[in-house]
Image (cartoon, rainbow, N blue to C red; front, side, top):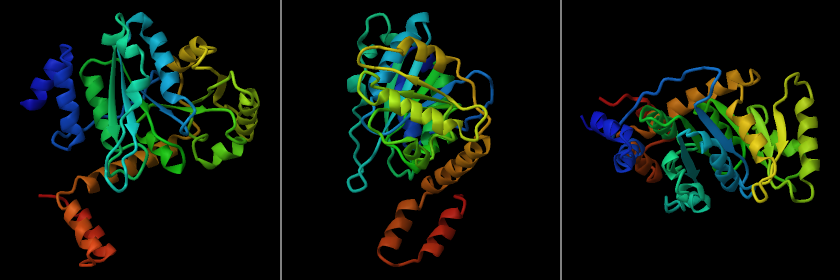
Length: 295
């Protein structure tokens, strides 16, 4: 009853109802079973990359362009939780000017999400939250992920397309290869093209991607500060096609994400952690308990 009522209100534009619905999903009170649909047109896009490359500012520029034709876009901005306190800054909305635009603010919805207990950069609950947003009338969902590194490939479990944001002074293309992201990226944007080294870094990425790859993803230079290349990037990303290079890796991440979600939602998860911390049980025994299905 709660789900049907909140979905109905959210579809009518009630943002308070939408916020309550997303919170109930994030807190594990409402469970959705999203269906993964493969199509030529994406509905969920992951925007990922290392800290400091300007992902939020670049996304703000793209949202201004994408909403010109009335497209409704929701953003799930993922922030890391402190491993000690569990708190998160959730400050991505500070950089979003489009949410204050008088003609576009109703076409954009931004929701911050903490990683909480998730081991990767994208908590498994994000897939359900994205499905909820699509269910309640949003045309597209953008997931802005946190940080960079090998855990970042978890966004493959959620998104139809993956866009990697890079910047100058990031080292050569080998550094991006080591992060495990280039093999999954459907497109790469090198932001801060107004700074020295951006063109060189873009060329190094192109050379790295062409090695043994007959259909490398496109690499484009953009500047969120000046607006250079934004219109071209908006067209590229909106019509982005999925590459066939990493289909197996995508399904691998989806299986791992589903498995992690089941463990984290186990009713005795915190009690088992406490028993481990106090030395009352061993790791193998804890894992067996976590694999037991809740009644």
